Amino acid sequence: MKTKVALVTGGYTGEAAVSYKSSKFVYSQLDKQKYDIYLVDITTDGWFYVDGVGVNHPILKDDFSVLLNNVKVTFDVAFIILHGSPGEDGRLQGYFDMIGLPYTSCNALTSSLTMNKGYTKAIIADIPELNVAKSVLLFENHRANSIELVESKLSLPYFVKPNAGGSSIGMSKVKESSALKEALDKAYDAENTGAQVLVEEFVSGREFSQGIFRNSKGELVVLPATEVKTTREFFDFEAKYVPGLTEEITPAELTEEQQARAARIIKEIYIRLNCNGMVRVDFFLENDTDKFYFIEINTIPGQTAQSFIPQQVRAFGMSEADFYAELIEAALI
Image (cartoon, rainbow, N blue to C red; front, side, top):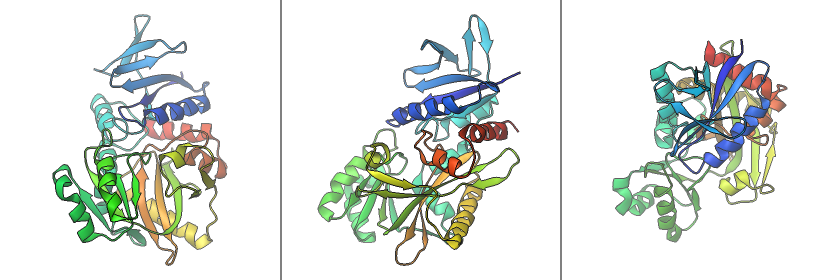
């Protein structure tokens, strides 16, 4: 009998557009001989199973099932490809925990924690060989005096970003004090990010993104790194999704020592944050020192054909179909 997989997509934020692209690619790669795949779209308008001809069938939220021709269909596992809220911030995972449905991502606590960039940095800051940029975490109550708080503790240039956002939405690089207020307002007002802002001192270095996953044997597997070179000021939303603005080199040109050090640190980050499934860690290697500087962790990484994780899976010598099957089988254990 085939495993019934709910491929969960959509979302409540601007990242939904990316979720649809990711889930379309994952659907194309999953083995249809092994899995019955049901595309489930979660939006503010409702939760629906979208059938092969585009008809929406409401999801019954008491047990995450769907009625098809008066027959209730339940799922064996949820494959979460929903970037942003509620699929990446722990809300959906908490619901699945309550109804007893296995899923492919990190658990509710880890997902919620890692959506908060400032809290994440606090937990991993003492990992050996890892460095974190000096930063200030701002809440809504700080908004009136946020400029003073930043300028009293940090030195230009700054990265200003929503503390619970993704896809670089609402993020700015600030090189002059006169641009700080606009950047802070942009980050505070980013949709569904909690009106919290993280401001970090700029780190000058080579930028990398590297995936890691737990396979069906319980082993941690670190994928080859991708180096990111962009013509933009930084790796912003346009750089991520507009063709031609960024060069992505997979596998990255790193020495054996750099590869081994990155793998050690990334494994420890995964363990320290109690991750499951696949995650992606973004980091800098500082130009003058070669120190590893943590940028952020993404617990529901993008999954288009051009996204980092599929690139790295292919560079690792694995097919995307086998990779996604590993995530499903690991979730079912």
